[in-house]
Length: 100
Length: 416
Image (cartoon, rainbow over all chains, first blue to last red; front, side, top):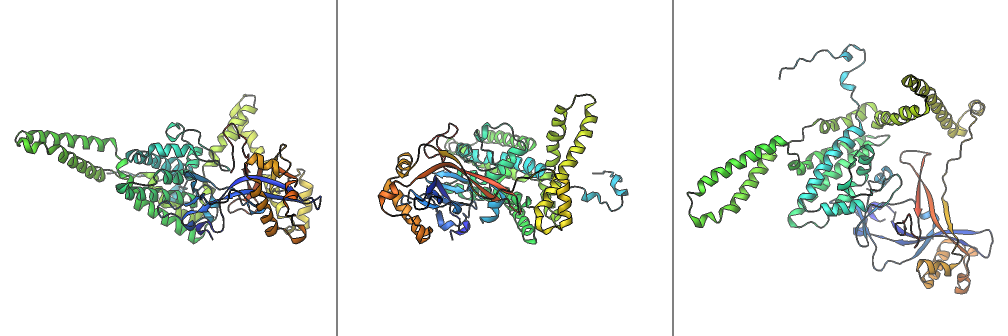
């Protein structure tokens, strides 16, 4: 899924929220508000530079709530154009090993 | 050449081969060697193709990442390029170059492609050389990257012009111009008008031929790369022999030692004081490593460990931590006002999240009035532990920040 990203999808963090459940006092939901990005070219590595390009499409939902556990770590995205980034997979050894 | 090479002092030692004494060193061979050369070539390359400004802008606009030093200046304004800076460069150069060389004009497509592939091969080789454990596959990949680098590096050959080559080119060009001036006197006026362009093309062609004929990549650090794979085969990973440890000793052993002493016979004191400190640190690390094994150790060893270890070690952090609660948000309405996201969208997303992620008996009520009064907290930072590559119990902390609209360190809002 998502080509070389292998199931991971970069997103822009909008908010970190704790939601208290009024029905049970002790329950707190930890969620993230995200704006998901879309991998260009189905997430395939570019022939030219070997990196994945991601973009924020016009029809991308501005706010999506996901569970805290879905965040795996930070991604290093180098801005290419307005609403378009190159995912830098050489930023550390783990990313280099996972995105290929 | 008639060189008389005498006996090396190591030749007399048993089980020692002088040729094996060289150890590949990423710091001096790649960071301070090849990367430094490569950046000279890249700078000349992007200047030639009119992309230096774009390269500088993208360099300056690099986003933060854990362990990565974000450049504060444009590439051309950086004056200090030492090991730390070059290591940093290796982590981002491919991305920056890819962005700077995007959308090539017709004639630029092939040179850009070759330049990017060349840089990519060297960066990938460097990444894989840092692995702590290798398999035949990883070594084969390294060989492939090195091979590709050698196949593509010709694109930068024209930037390897030495002063001697340049002098030869200038001399030959002056000679040709002198001969042309003599010929021009014998040529009709109508033909003279066409001559300048022809001459320029011919001169460029002549220059390229000479540069390609006389320039080369035969220097020692280029050759040393060829020993990396063989060395891994025979002696294990390259980081074990890194000279960075020795370089770091300048700080911990000498500088700190100097500050702590009374400067009376300083060299002797530094040597004598650092040894015991280092030994104790090693001892504590060994004990910690043994303790981490925990249940796998025999009770005798554990009992002994408890007796000898007085330090209480903090547990390894492997859960997500939230930080920086904001006091101005207590419900959905406050959040909507601050973030600019409409209430309708937030309600819709909360309902979707509740339906897909929560058990039936714990789902949120779906009427807007209840959702509107839902108590919430807005936080600024989430620390995510990420397992370090090829380590079982070492984590890097990724701090994801979301300041929404607030400024972060006087540089606008930051939402990772």
